[in-house]
Image (cartoon, rainbow, N blue to C red; front, top):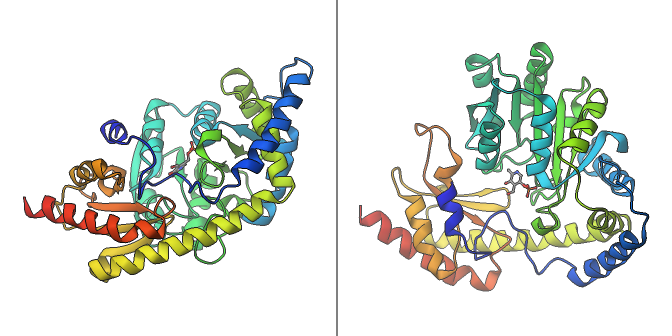
Length: 374
Ligand SMILES: Cc1ncc(COP(=O)(O)O)c(C=O)c1O
């Protein structure tokens, strides 16, 4: 994973995980931020609330009810520096060192490493078209203390965790006293139809910790996200936030609160979804002329190009970098070598239609060269 990180020099065509610059109202946001920086500078020099600014927590609570079906109070929300610090806060607060944690295979490499750094033992659980195979987890590691899932749009395959599996997962958590972390990294940013409600929206027993992020919906440069905890965990999370994981400074939070409150966030999301859907369609259409239909599939905000077994996807990616292309190799998302499949994930946000033809032609030329040289 580290090697793959080193290879990436900045946003390039097909880069996954970063939003399009063109859809974001940067000037408007800069204006809002300059107000909040002034407000922060003239405010009394006091320690802010360790849970984050109330204005932002209120806006997040209201948006979550509408967009993700989660009924929660601002007191259940803690503002964090993105998903990464939300995960760190959660793992500190739950204190599950030495215990097993289910994670999706394929799944987000940073989650896997985050669990290891917090001294948990990741148990890879395969993923199919209904999301994480909960029965596999039940059969192979029922004693786990935690499951980390991306139920809305599985990372990286894009599948949605079925209702039947959601219910089995929750039943397991209740029966075993286990916790579930819902990584809702894309939130309502779903290109096909309305986004499925969050897993936390059907949690009546308080076992789900929901983590959201503004990295995809606004920008990863903000380093802004949030955790929604069941009421029983509010005090514990607040204590850990105060001592070990404080929120970012107030100005970025207040600016984001205003951006949401004034309706700019919703308008931005609507525009972004339209643009991404058009980019994805243009990409799929051109890929359809270059590859077999069953080797190409949509995967959240990416398009997956499957490669033949044994194809060196990491080496292919390395070859694409000098051409300012940056697809992600699918194989690095797998834990189990037995399951690992090669493929390329092409981010749609970073592929404007005018670059599709040239970039795909170059990509296929490299794929051909690397696979026929074996
Ligand atoms: C599965 C998954 N979770 C979370 C995130 C967002 O992380 P952060 O909020 O730390 O930027 C990403 C970003 O790529 C992701 O792919």
